[in-house]
Image (cartoon, rainbow, N blue to C red; front, side, top):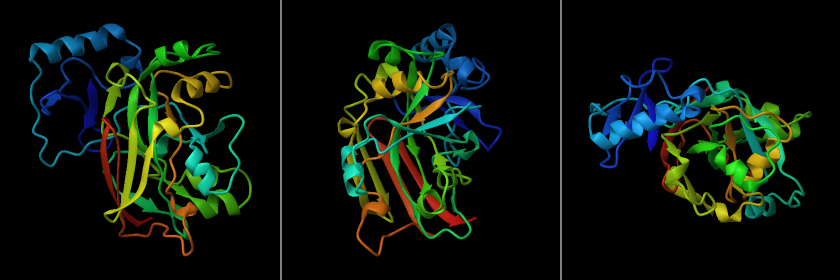
Length: 285
């Protein structure tokens, strides 16, 4: 299933994109798409049944904003330097273990919402990523099979980063990763049954129409199952939590001088195979 949330910020309603590309209203079946729903197999089965029976009312998508596909996200866990190509382009060694950091959940916005360039920023960068959405509470998972069984689905994420804040201002990466609007997510949460192999997905990103990133999840250093299993050893993952799994080569930081960092007025478009497409216009904070 392709689950999504549509409507103004803070007032989104749950919806489904059916196999014919028609937007369907889920409001009569569920209150929202959140961790509670994703952990409720019977509720998900009701949605599947209603979709199959063709009884869900259609929504007019004209002019309708698409919000983040998951409400009330508890935490966004991120994996850094998780593609061989990206590690190489930034001149860093392949990590022996996953590099883990956190983004605040309030950085998450809709897939086509405005991204704000922070005040004083000179190195705002792009990163297309595959996002994992957790569907069952995960603690100390032992096998890849267990890890994948705890995944509700997948989505497109844009891990926007400010490199000067992240790398040159001391401390951890947090300052360069947690600026407002720095995690567009969606348009859809595609349930795991529709993504049989998360290591077989292409990722692309364009800036002002120019292709910048053209990668593939097969280049991940730590694949999806290993990432979920690994993170569950250090923190409890709850239904509705999100894991951004890293970005392929092609970011601004890895390009020759003068590096083409993002500026107000730029347009970024990105997609992950089968998971939909995002488009953001950048403006000044």
